[in-house]
Each structure stands twice: as structure tokens, then as C-alpha cells.
Image 1 (cartoon, rainbow over the protein chains, first blue to last red):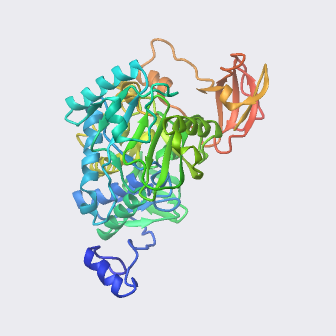
Image 2 (image 1 turned 135 degrees about the vertical axis):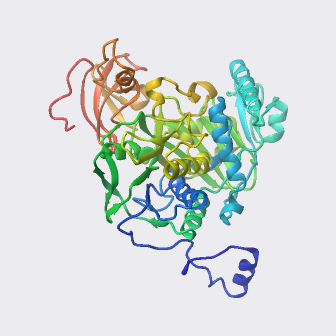
Image 3 (image 1 turned 180 degrees about the vertical axis):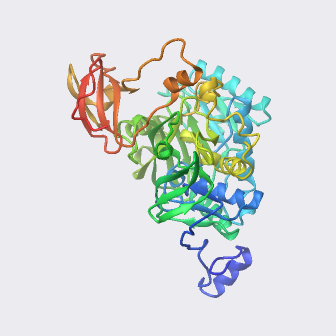
Length: 420
Length: 92
């Protein structure tokens, strides 16, 4: 691949230092769309880029284009709180999400791109007797599924997060909790850029500013798309568009069991290191970590009304800041630096949909709701598998659209109390 | 913060209300097929644009009513009783 960086290494850095860092080349090729591909992926976020990468790497399908209406990683991939974890309850979800975490663990080497994975652990707080009981059940279920989890006492939590108010008269008393040691954070932009670069190096075309306006449907199956950059034909098309999945489904003539909501997060000004783990308080919906730059990253719960506006409401912002300050009183003088929102695709059972749609040749990866970032590697892996082979990956078999007719839901919202 | 005009109480902040999802869904007969029942329970238009939806003034008078609201701008185009048909002026 000419005009593109071949390999990153310590040696390349040293060479750059000696030559004024003028030898760096773009990470992926700038291309014009061709008229025909074997596979089109709609959505250039983490899931779409990972799908293209695994299509090329695992299945040798390289005549692939990723169509992104904005810029790479500019949607939810750039709008999350960068947390990776696999603390789910049911065996189907545990397998899926832990495979994702395992892929994250090897991703920097696999992509030759530092995704800055930091397995700093995730502490979940119990604020009531009921929380304690349900967390014991939750942690035990994780261990039964072969995923490490440790129940924590208040003293252990205080050692892991000294800034946390664990006093007995706290507004949100901490009675205990549990810990997933392998959870942590990864640099979200690097995940998008790393997959884009690696996919591009294998021959995938990454096409930005390319919005799909219409599907070409011929004798009941997909034949391509009409986009803002012209008509592009392909016999297999994958959708990885998160909160905009319903919009694309409508263009193709079907509906999804999805509602789009705004999810917001925010960061404070950067401060010195004070929190080296991720703290999640399911009871209040607050989750807090400190970025490598030093910002306190605060995530919130959904604005619980349908929305395609990429912003969060003031009501939820206020609630999440109030909860964070009850947990960490010393953060009260920090200034808020940035706040943002993304549109997430929430499904009734808070589990994803990865597989065929009612239109032949058209496949979808959606329904990750508030937890799409952690699932990027496995979402891409399983969508690539079904696009390449026409059969569901075994990890994705329980997560088909058909479950909303059969009633075989995988209700992680009710089960694990995840922050949906 | 959205201001929502409760039919009984007038304009109040959005955090006095809860959204109850899409309005005007018709429950299929009890003998409906699994496909039809699944459609009714789970599948939604989820429009990017005007959405007809139920809201309840839960921290106020408790009344259920309907809104026609843009999911893009959050602008409220109409407020109408829970048992009324959507107003004609609302583009679908």
C-alpha cells in the first residue's frame, strides 16, 4: 500500500525523533468509491471498521467498502466513556462479551496500533442490602461462566478508590461491592483508527462523507446502495449504525425492535492522578474514571425519551453530577470541561442483534444500547462471519432478530442491572 | 430542559414527567400469531422526526396524555388527550 504507514515500531519513533517526525504518512488510504464491491458496510464506527477488518483478515474478503456518513469514529465510538468489561449475567452474554474483552487484550499487537488498553479494574458499588445480595448473585454467575469476579468489603473498596466517600453517614452509603479485575478502559479513537488502518492495509476502502439514502433491491434481495457519493453495488451489505439502525431499516422496508435514546457523558478539567480504577454505582447510574490525560470522566444514564439529537438533557446531567459528588466529595471544585451525547439503540432485553434481516443479503449488527464500545471487537468478528459465510457465528446464534418472535429474550437489563 | 405543557397543569419541567413510549398502538386479538404479537410488543417505527408518544405527569397530577414531538429538535408540535386521535396538522 503506497502512501500509507507500513508499520509502527520503537525504531520508527527513534527514526522520527532524529528526522523531525516528518516521515509519518496517513494511517489509511484516501479512496474514491468503486462502482461494485463484494461487501458494503454501512457505518464507519468501531463495529463497522472491525467488521471490515475481520472480513479481510479472517475470511479473505478484501473487496470491501466501509461507508461512513460523517467521519471515522465520529459517532458513538468517539462519544462513550471508553470502558471495557464483561460483567454480564447470562451464559450467552458472558461468552459474547468476554470474547470481546479477550480480543481487546490482544488488539494492540493484532492491529500494530496502541489502543492504550488499561486493565485498571471495575468496582461496582452496593448501596443497600438488596444491592449486596444481587451483586453476590451477579459475581457468582460471572465465576460460574469462567469470568473472574471478586466480592469486596467496604475496606477493600476504600483501598481501591481512596477518594470515595465510604463513611457511614454518606448520602450514598457504600456497603460493599464487587470487582472485575480485567475490566478497564481503552482509547476510543485509537480503536477506530487502529481498525481503519489495519483494514485499509488489507485492501478495504474506507469512504467518509458518504451517506446511504436508498437501498437497491432487486427481486427481493439487496443489490447495493444509492449514496451521497453515487450508486455502489454489492450483493452483501452489513449495517452497523447504532442509533440510526431504524432509519436504515426503514429505507430497506422493515422495522426493528429498537428505540433510539440520547446517552451523555462529560469530563472535568485534568487533575493529578486520584482514581486508578473505574467506579460504577448502578443504583444511581453514575460511572466514574480518570482518563490518562487526568480528566475525571463521568457517564450518565439515558434520557428516557426517544431522541436523535446528539446531546443530553440538563435534568440527567444534574442528576449524574449530584451522584458523582456524593460519591467523591473532593471533586466538587472541579470545573466541567466538555459534555457530549450519542444516540444509542436500545432493545427491550438490552442484548444485541447480530445476523440476517428480512431482506436477503442484508445483515445487521445493532442493539448494543449503552454498551457498544466494549463490544466492538466481537461485534465486528460476528458480523464479518455471517457476511462471509451466510451462517451465524456460534457466539451470535442466541442474538438473532428472530428472538422477538419466539420470545427467547436474553434479558440483561433485568438480570445484571447494567446501566441501561 | 424541555418544558412540557400538561393538559391539566400547564408548562412544567421535563423531569416532572415520564415518557411512556409510542402512542396509538393497537393490541392484536388474543389469537394473534407469534409474528404479529412480537411486532406489537417490540417492533417500533422509531422515527427520526415526528414521534407520537404518551407522557405522564408522574410528579404532578398523574395524568396521561399524548405529545407530537420531534425526536431531532425535541420541539413539541401538539399536546392532546390520551384517547384522542392525533391532530391533523401534525405531519407523519
